[in-house]
Length: 294
Picture 1 (spheres, rainbow, N blue to C red):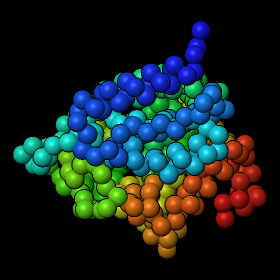
Picture 2: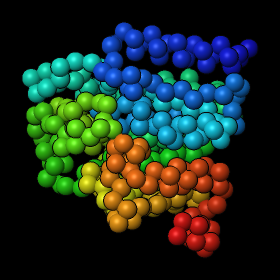
Picture 3: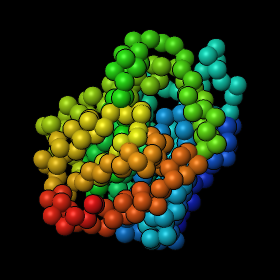
């Protein structure tokens, strides 16, 4: 017989034990749990971005918890580990997509019993993982939230480099005060998400997934907005309750849109958008007719 209290306690303890043994680069990198004292109407499973950590979902997780929901944002494999990482000693990020696929599936299985409806989501490469889950297991998922999903980059030359060369790359914004993750990575560790993104785009044309909210920013220099829209149009053909929103360029919301510390000065707008979609049953046609997102 399912026992909610013991199940949530076990999930939290297992994550703590696993992360205590790493050790962690920063306490911000710990898996985040925002859990009610009972099964919630909705439970959210969120995946953070590449080289980052669950801290990216603290603001949204807290907002959804306050609304009465359960939220889990687990630390991904190879992320958040303390060490003197550099080009000669790169962080231990997986270079096999199967590692991430197994990880998100395990968390899907653990999380779905904690709410009457399961909603998955992710930011950047975490959005790629959430989109993959939505295509593979739509029968278990109510909706999917994709924030600046990494399907490919804005710069085709950079994409070519990612596909071709095995060098170490340091983030241009590595000194951002909101960055508690790694400062760089080996290119093959990112290549798997580029390949997965293309598979998702191709499959979306013929495979029904869940309803999706896809969020872009016109100031995003890391992802391809045209492909966000392409994915949206493909998903919409099967799921009319899917929405798309792109923040105006004048707001200057960067790719790192999930926290104020990482550069989003209009985080409240993103949180409101997500909560509105979660609570709404409007189709995209009805959204356009009512001007809800104008």
